[in-house]
Image (tube, rainbow, N blue to C red):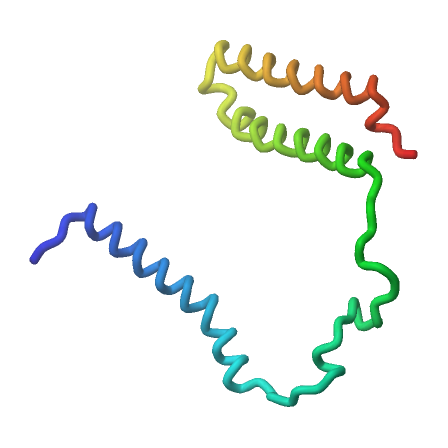
Length: 123
């Protein structure tokens, strides 16, 4: 009943999956079993940071905040692509350099567009 290394690797993944599910569920089960069971209206009340909530929970934000966040996420993702490219720069060659210049150019064009539209101005 000798298994191949291919089957062995799937067995390791299965053991890791079962272990991760166990470590995620075990504290919840232990807390449910050992935790206090006193029900009260104060315990079930909604609060925020220890303070009683005031006002309507439905608050509308300006669209500018969402656009500003999207611009941040785009340029944050740019660093995710730039970092591995910079680490392997010597091994990639001229083609990868040109591709990254095109990528940065597209993002710079988006930044200029956002700048012209006034998205980056915090009012």
